[in-house]
Structure formats: C-alpha cells, structure tokens
Length: 274
Image (tube, rainbow, N blue to C red; front, side, top):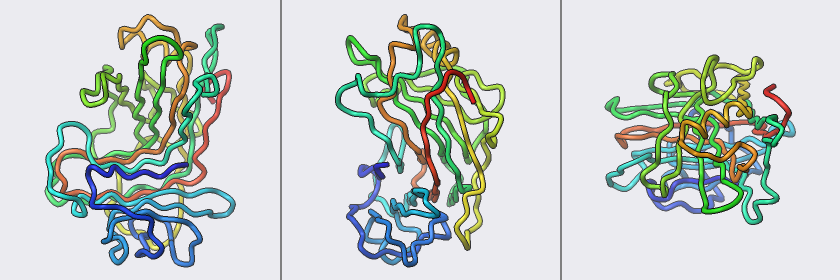
C-alpha cells in the first residue's frame, strides 16, 4: 500500500516525524500512533494541511489523507486535479500480475474495504470531489494498452454512471471507465453485501470509525462490455491488473478540500461476482 500525493498540485511534501492530528477530517487518530505520514509544512501544525498517513488499527492497515487546494501553489489544470492514492502496484514482469479472467469466459476481479464517509469543503461550489476504487489494466502483449477504472464510493456531485467510456488526453490515450458502486451499473457489478455510493460529509469527526463496507466486482461480462465499447478486439483474458488503488480527487476550483480514510483494503480473484 504505497501512499501518494500528486506533487503537481500541492506544496512541497516531506516525510513527517510530527504532524497535526487530522482526525476531524480523515477519521484517523494520530495521537500516539506508530504509523507514518507524508505532508506539507502546513500539515505539521494544521489538521487540514495536505497529508497522507497510515497506521494499524485492530490488526488492519488503515490508510488515508487530506487533500487541500488551499495548501497548493497557484496554477491551472486541464484534466483531473489534486489527488491522494493508496496503491497496490504490480510492476515489472506482467506474467506475475493478476490475470483474473479466463479463456473459458469466466473469472472476476473484486475489491473491498471499510470506509469513513469522506469530508469535503468547498468555498465556491465550483468543481467536484469523488473517491473510491481505482484500477489500471494493461494488455499482456503487443503495443502497451491501458484501461483505467474509476469506481466511486462517494461523490459531491451526481451519483450516476457515465454511459460511455472515454480517453484521458493527458495519459497517452488511456481508456477511462467512470462508474460507481451501485445496483444496475453497466461497467461493474456491485456486491449484494456492499453499501451503495453516497454523498460526502461536511461535519467533523470526533473518533475513529469505518462503518461503510464497499465491495465491487469486474466480471468477465463487465470486462467484455468495456472492451467492446472502447472499440478493442482483444478479449478479457488478454488483460492483467497492473495497479489497484483507493483514489480521492477533486477537479475544477482549488477552493476545495477532501479528507478520507479506508481500513482493510483487499483484492481478490474469483470465478464469479461475490
């Protein structure tokens, strides 16, 4: 679980040996914690300063952070925006990366975790914030091809699925699938045991809690539908999972901030959605 802050959009970040308790925003109580944190100078004394941190709670890894547009240099962006991610990276030899779909037309990739309801503040209500699961897939052979699934558990805007796939113009024509954890979606399959995607909160937290369980699947049929919509002739079994992450981001105005945390983020392969 590699924590990451998008350095393009925040003030300089260093490993923090001391920092403000970000509990009200992230849901992680850092008082007496043996975990680690990386943050801006402001995060050392301000609980809303940009920071990524992790610790162990009851035997489970908890990861989270604060992304604050007010703790960023002045700039303009053309696609995406400030983000914090917590990533399992399957790099190097692609033969060792998860390949959950089979030539028999079966297989399923599943992600799950326990979430706080993320905090969001906006000074001008311009732009939007979202967070949840993020997956990068790579074709096993030939010219490198990538698909990026962005699967929201929480949003500050409409809780609807985008009806078409599209291309990220800043990432070498990566195909993007924008969806959410909800019943009846086209691109992914929500588990019956999972909560549904929900709005963010504006209130502050006073204690640690991860009450919302989310689980989402990408079945063989889901993956085949994405490939067809993207105009690709390859089959699901020709793709591997190159990275799987928890992702939080805001776009548009920098007069926003988002705080979040997730416990027990896990990845599974199965024969069918669970």
